[in-house]
Image (cartoon, rainbow, N blue to C red; front, side, top):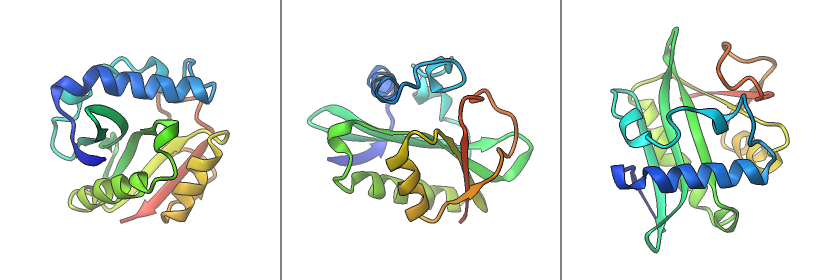
Length: 156
């Protein structure tokens, strides 16, 4: 497995990865990434300064991914976006490596990193806490991910 920046050819596989994970957790509904209009075009979405998306590839298959992007109205805070890993990839340590790469990039552009997730993604919540993210009582702002019920912030 290796980590690299997203390429245009990865768009469909990344969309499939995210949809597979959302179905697994019953999050294939409005208010989650499920209805994100950019889900199949991350290569183009993450071309702006302060934005980037990485994938984990194994045997020509995208098995995990994660991005960083700005949050409107919060110039010094980025958002950890669309971090997903296929079930068979979890527990291998690659997600920790991926998060490290993503946060190293974020440190060059931002002071803090925010994320939104679902409380029923228990392992993900433990992962974020283990990696220095602190739970918040409410979201930083209202986003299109209104189904998310758990929020974190990390000082970079």
